[in-house]
Length: 75
Image (cartoon, rainbow, N blue to C red; front, side, top):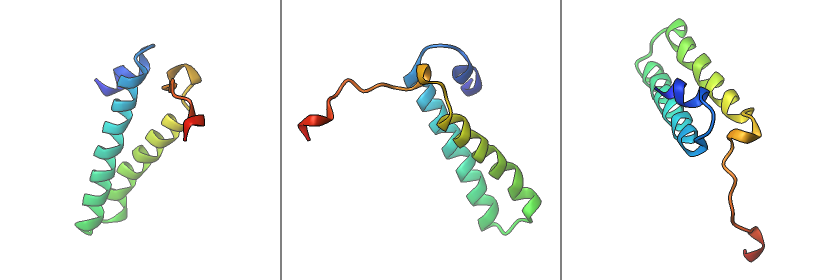
């Protein structure tokens, strides 16, 4: 469902939540593998997907980014 949310147009806030869900799930999996002392080949897949998630979020199109209506001049 998260992949479908990220791929369909519109709903930028829902997309942010999907990216956050992927990030926390994959980060937790990576940390769990490391703590259990599993070999590098078990750590590699969650690490690759975590990096792909971060890169996908960072380079997402401007139309999928949340734009704040606040003005920073009041700070």
